[in-house]
Image 1 (tube, rainbow, N blue to C red):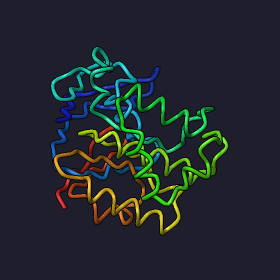
Image 2: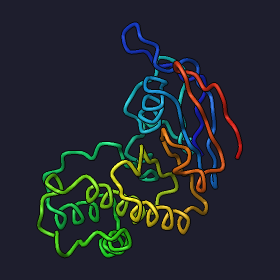
Image 3: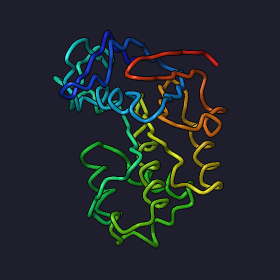
Length: 212
């Protein structure tokens, strides 16, 4: 479970999160929405332990993600909107993930193939030099293979063509049980068949929280 209590975060004089409280539980699929600057990214980064709050707290299964970040991140998969500039080739990347996060390399390849990413053809190509869509498919494959109890996707379909989006939705449907799925998105229509809750943020506050 994710529990956010009276979370407040400032950057200088700018108030990015203003006394935000919410909870996310197993079997919830949430669309987190709002305009740019609404506080969505700050909330996600607080959940991941990137930011120290000015006030309030975040707990992930009872653990503080800043103080116990390594332990917390064991249960979270995160796919950012902009893929990181990883210089490793795909083989090296899968080896690294396999060792550092104890993820089955064959399972990564399975999900990559399900996303129609030809890993064998691109095995020794740098991740950094792949197309945006190929990077996104690889990161999605890793997130699914990790089998985390919490999966966070930031604009997950931004670089995917319609067929790849369909593959992504199909795989998520197969892997949603007993998980928290959190989608940061501007387009509810793209995830409406996956989500059962919609949260809308504005000016650092949660202004609506609806069950769908």
